[in-house]
Image 1 (cartoon, rainbow, N blue to C red):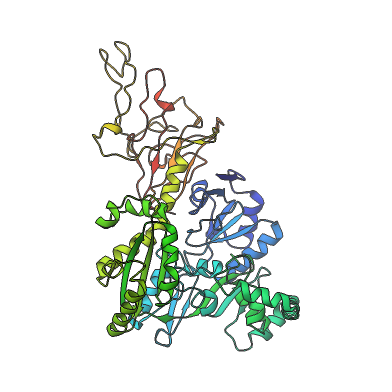
Image 2 (cartoon, helix red, strand yellow; image 1 turned 60 degrees about the horizontal axis):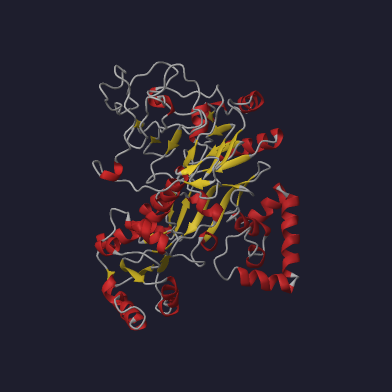
Amino acid sequence: MAVSTRGASLQPHLEAALAAAGLTPRVRGRMTDRLAYAHDASHYLLVPEAVVVPASAAEVAQLFRLSAELAVPLTFRSGGTSLSGQAVSDGLLVDVRRHFRGTTVLDDGARVQVEPGSTIRSVNALLAPYGRKLGPDPASEAACTVGGVIANNSSGMACGIEQNAYQTLESLVLVLPSGSVVDIGFPDADHRLRALEPELHAGLGRLRDRVRGDEGSVRSIRRLFSMKNTMGYGINAFLDHDEPVQILAHLVVGSEGTLAFIARATLRTVPLHPQASTGLLVFDELAAATGALPALVETAPATVELLDAASLRVAQRDVRADAVLRALDVVGHAALLVEYREPTLSALEARMASHERALRGVHPGAAAAFTADAPARAALWHIGKGLYAAVAGARAGAARRHAPGQGALRPHRPAQPRGHPQRRRARAPAPPQGHPRGGAGGRPVRRAVTANRSAPAGTSPRRPASASSCGGRWRALRAPETSAFSSSCRTSTSTTRCRPARSTVCARRPAPSRSTPATWSSDYAPRATAEEPIAQAPLRHGTGARP
């Protein structure tokens, strides 16, 4: 795990600069706030120097100027669903989800004007009455936002390279690092960019001419971007657009926030076909699944998603998995989650008939595996889209079994219901006669500890008042179904203290969400013995909400 803590409190020079800019009401400088934003869905942990929640493009422009003056990194965060650490920083972290959430449907749903903090699902809910939706459909649509989708050029399972953010983008309102605000929707936007940023405008023109003047570069770019490609900047913009302002707008797509801040976007929507049929085709091996793809692609499905053996094992744990999937003894199996969508029922029936003919020799049970039943389809897509959280949860489980400093994983023990023989811990040695935690050869008392339990100031419910540090054995864990974060606290500094009661977290760990009471349980903690003080027994913390 990557960990960085650049300071325990807001730096005085940064605090003074934010106050001078009139941004003090927007600053979240408390340690609890900073820890709450210290992680996203990745395994990185970077504690920001300050969290700022701007309410307008003008305030973002001020933050850009402060970042340049103070040489402090600036990172934008919205949904926090990144698996690669794009939404964490040890500098200034700017939360744009709180205020940038406006959405306006235009032209009877043909276009939509949306701010970066709106989630994909919320925008699609507004477009649904018009029979339209956004082109990108990432699996994390319930949490990811439009700003992150554009910044990462996220696509999802159905849009491919024809309906992604790059192709459906109409215009953007950008805040450049210099603080200039450029609305690309204006007819004279290119002239405005030249007036505001002459060097940038001229440089984009030179790069365009250089790329187009090299036949080898043109061939390479056409080849690389004929398939899904989100590696690096979208330099295909130099071939697809002539005006520097349009080149800039499409370079921002997939730039991961390194070129400009997206204050507002106008996107073209795509039809939402009401008739659909979905099926999970299971194959004995991965080669058989990939071998069926050419024939399957010929039938023009809306979506084809491959699930390997590891994904199937994780999907089996889902409560909504059907009996067939649960009963499958996964060895080297693979599956294809396939969906067909059409505007009318007759068109869907014709599409399914062509599917049956194409796959009759490849997968005999394909016809029976498909369903148009809405609840059954929802369950299948819950499995497909739920892999985002489920795989992350499985990864978190592996991370918490890691023995720090030993470079090895502890043996995995699946969770068992209460009373199961494998859940019982080994009996601890009997305490001596008269011991406060035992009787005549009695067993140590098992205690259930909750956050509502009172504790002396400066201590946690299971720590004596004399203990001052975690000792490197105190663990924090988020619920796998809501967060992928898991790590071990490895501090031995005596100044790192644990807070009592409801806010009992290590000073190096993210604080629990205020919306969900923290709950402590000794179910997963090894029993403490008479020889080992109970303060040394590892505790784990679960919370049901993400910051």
